[in-house]
Length: 81
Image (cartoon, rainbow, N blue to C red):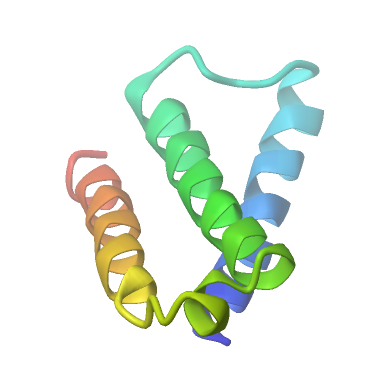
């Protein structure tokens, strides 16, 4: 559930920055890492929801591998602003 809220907040952030700039903003490290993290979490949710990988194939550790990496990317972005 927390990943869904984070994905939604990150999506809103990207859309606001896109609208303000008039184009997808990927020109600096901050924007790139935020977009990259958004993509990682989005792919995780596609696998989780549409393919039911965690339940069908008993991959309960998938979230434990993906979400800390996404969190560390966002934390590094905030540290080096």
